[in-house]
Image (cartoon, rainbow over all chains, first blue to last red; front, side, top):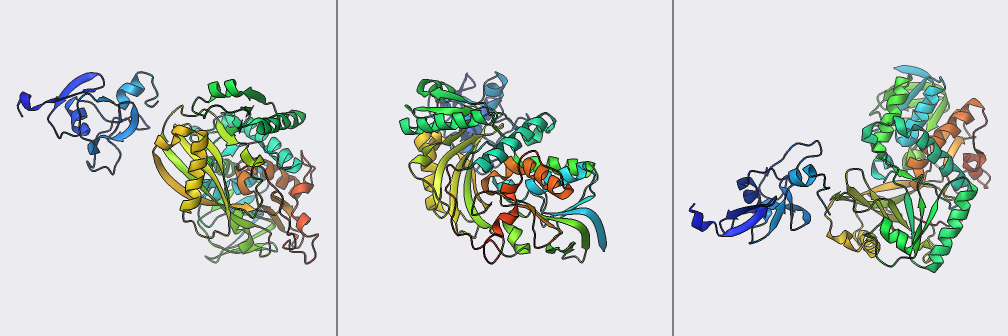
Length: 95
Length: 389
């Protein structure tokens, strides 16, 4: 894909990522090189089913926790946070 | 096969497990049988609130005693029990309910339970997600929450460590007159048999005054810090509940995981485990009336369970006089997690002829034998009750 096609900017854990229209947030998180959620035992997790069933792709979008990133298309300017950052920074991951 | 023991306990819910631990610790050889496994009935369905309650002086005495017993062992509970001394906030919505807060505080103080009155501002600071304004609350800091199936598992492991044996899953055909018969042909002999089967107690002892009382719970995804205490409304003043009425109340519990348990409901006459969607909707709406943002959270599971309810809202603990070998430890309704440890103490004292730490009479099954007919079914008047647990 050409750089020009990546017309949608968003941030993943504070880093700006540009994606093509129609890209899921799960794909944007993968492009950023991050895991989606962190399991109870502390393991990083990523999208497994890709169809909204497994809940492994949950992230915090514009402050709303537990959003299934594989089911949501990126829109310009949204802020995505993952457990790695939310938990790693000593935060609770949720409001 | 035949086996013998000093005590055979039928039912391995939290009450049966607590009784097994207590019996084993007194040096009684103990066998526990259960149709499923440890903590699989009401124990697995309930919230796990260790709470002092005051619907009656007898209920108060039992819950105060048992809450103290839980605090005494809290340091030894393994991590999976998730014991959290978060306290209970009894939330008052108006001046009338604040009067109830003061009444409750005076009563709790008189029995040695510390509590603290929060005014409207202090409540808003303690629980910022509660609607504003509310009139205040009573904070009972010595109340706690835990995860009941793992608590029952711990008590059972302790019993086994002290020599008890566990037989499960084993369907029980009969229990009485010194003998417990299992479907697989095993016959267990004991001078003392304990029926700790919760709502199923009457299957083995027809005529027991126990009715199923269904409840619903919702559990959410993880939202750490959304609430910090177990929150219970004092709204019962507006709608005095009686045993025959379906009802809902605001009762929300924070789990150590960050999940929230949302309750509660009460229903008689519901025999199946399905969800009553109208009652569930009323229950969630009640929670939302106190925690306006709770509707934005994601629920992950909804389920029902059955409380073992007695007409006078007190459990049945002690000998069943019509059978000199049979003891009961059932009928705890919504307080079985709280009162399991006290039940075990009272039961062991009754078996060994010792005096218990609190008077045992209010909980003796014999109170239902005074009725004509002797089965307990003659008692028609249900005790009024205050709040849901």
